[in-house]
Length: 312
Image 1 (cartoon, rainbow, N blue to C red):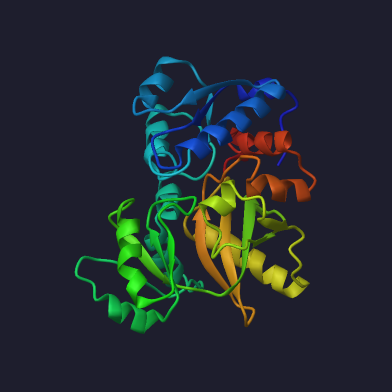
Image 2: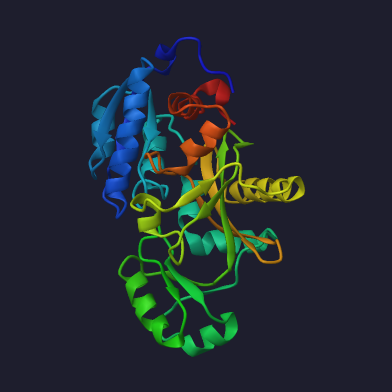
């Protein structure tokens, strides 16, 4: 990827942040960091706290492209992307289909299954589901997830049959569709992708039961290992699987794939993030730094994917 010789080439850039999802506070931090980085590099960037009138705001002002720093529903699920397509504005990240698929943990798992890619066994929750049959089929522990939330919001690990109903009730507060997924004991990895290239993988380590919201954004005892310590053959498998998973859900531009490695060394796909966090706790900037790329360069390279010569 070649950056333009003059950052004025980008024109006037709208940085969308905030939004109305449960991840609003994280998005405000991500968007502020992106906006500041663009301004430092001489880009004419304007931060816009996206509300439900955001398309009207964008159509009334003259912008050349959009950097989407929205997390969660309304911003990461294809809704804003569809509006930007109607306005004819180039934007960062996956398109409508890729955004919608990746945001939906249930449907992305169905896609991976159809593509023959490994993902933990799961059950899609529905009213009247026999929860005892679920634990018989998946064993314990399991993890319960809202299908269309990020940042581990509404997720809970279940260690006993008695906990499952309460975990489902918690997840249902955030989404009408939830996933009950087999628990994979082992190491968690995340692989960042930029312009179809894999950045150095990160191994995550937390004393909490899993890498939850607190471990991601609040804890001081979460550890990030990059280099991740895998031998070359395992690293190659991890990178190829992450890229295949990203492409399977029509990801493009940039994103992040989260995986587990079990005690036998097998990798299992958890989810894809098409607009990963860009805060001081975020993983894509860590991976970029390990690749020799500072935050400002990372932001410019993401924005450069919106230029005509960078389009795939």
